[in-house]
Image 1 (tube, rainbow, N blue to C red):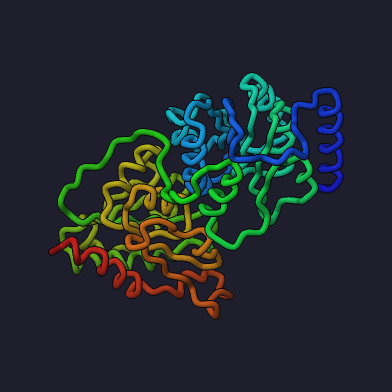
Image 2: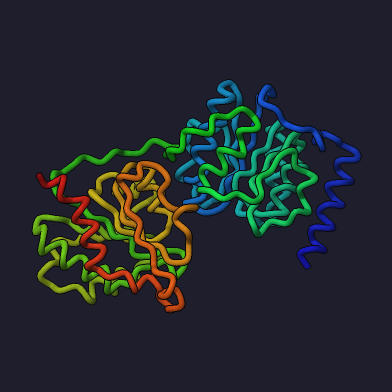
Length: 359
């Protein structure tokens, strides 16, 4: 069905291009090209948006007088809707039923260059072509077909390196600087005030169960932390859908340390979460969006990885602030592979982070 879908989409684009040949098919991009209106697509998860921020910053620095439009996922609205980086933001969750509305809004912007940093084929290329964009760049992933490449002026396929560097290198064809790898928060938010006590964040959930450290391990770690640092606070973070994990945590928690636990699960907006993450001494988390927000905020982290490869999607900047624990290959067959990482092991790493701050 997908091949048939791509066939019809290519036919539609061909008919459009025949009558309105805005796209400069086959033209090679070069560093001396100038653009005044640039559309950027980043329509996937929170972590993907954060990985894209160094490339977006590099584009803005390369074209300081250009106007930028962002096509973003609705779930990331609070991170981009009031950003000074973009003159306009369109929200789209990659559904074909909404493509006509997206194309209509893009046509009003009249992009000269479209940069697809992370979206879903083939609808992203369809929207870019039908928007009247003159040039299209795309970061292709392994799930993307080569069938759309003839509609792209430049693209990235195979790449052995971190996603952040991959996107920066993609844009080097335009003369963008590919050396500044720090992720950035696109909007203003309330910075935290340091209260003088250790605050250890626990991100309980993730998008997949294989990325979740078991709740009982978090409880064990909380007990060890409170025993060693009686004045510390353990801050639970997560969205409303993680309320079950929060309940499991408190059901297993010894009553004697309840006073050291503060739960923000389901109680914060995305902007408020930034303030919470900014206040932490360290965040303990699986491979999920808040990890990448914490990295951007330069909050120390202990991240737990199972099947994902941290050399591609883990912390890439400030390596001294971030500690990665990876499941051993022989443990990967377990239905909950992260359970092989003990609370003792995580506690030792957290202590390494906290001890210099206690002196």
